[in-house]
Length: 341
Image (cartoon, rainbow, N blue to C red; front, top):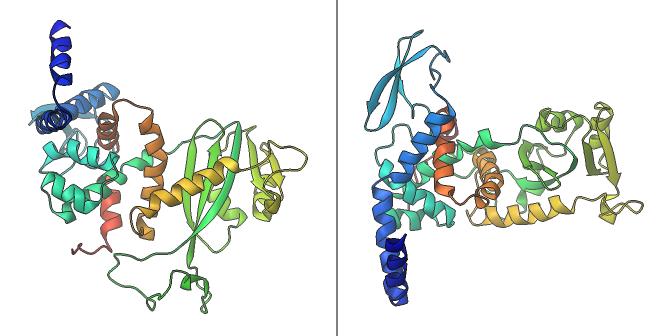
């Protein structure tokens, strides 16, 4: 402890520019050594004793030593070998020592170009890593919503940014999607449900106007029995509530913003979240619709990360525990093109 105090004393005696330089050097050395990644491996090892086989899903597996610090397994059923990272966002990554730095850049909201320059990787790699990470966040969506749950949706135009084939004429203005003569679905509804004082759930639904069936699919049985669902007087929400009699449904007239008889019946929390979400998406200069759910999961997960002092470690643990992240990433990338600057 005395040595730590002495180090702090010496550090505070340095001018501001020297302090910043020392911190940068220490952080780079810390990231290159991969110490946080090692801690993440240890955390995953304690969370599950053995990783089920990613090929046949069998839990009858054997530990087969380790390679470069990564646990190896062999499945008794299909006899295939795999590692702790197989199928995860970290699978087939050659520059794992730069992932800690990459996550730090993501936390700071840096652009792909800035991340590329900071870490010495190409922009395409920075893009691929981002979506491998985002593909691992689906497992963090809340399974249950209880208590008082506000719900509403907002509209985003469908974007085919990055697609190889676009089956429509280019839009000249951002609002052109509203003037659709072919009666095609040109918008996505972002269904939002928030527990007051609790979890946030976001779901992208490709539809012009939400129906009862789409609301049912979007919620996916997440509303707990006895939960109070608070919405505006949208008829589809009323129909949904009628088919779920164990829910308590409270409504208000949308133009009034709050119930005239009960001031607690409103969706102001959701409206505030929508404003924050729009600002969050704006920094990416347009998000392709096929990636939208990934970014919605990132927005919701970012709130949880802010509550942790060990955010990079939490990122890595989450990436290692999501065994289907690589498969999801490949599905998203089927229609993507390479980035050009």
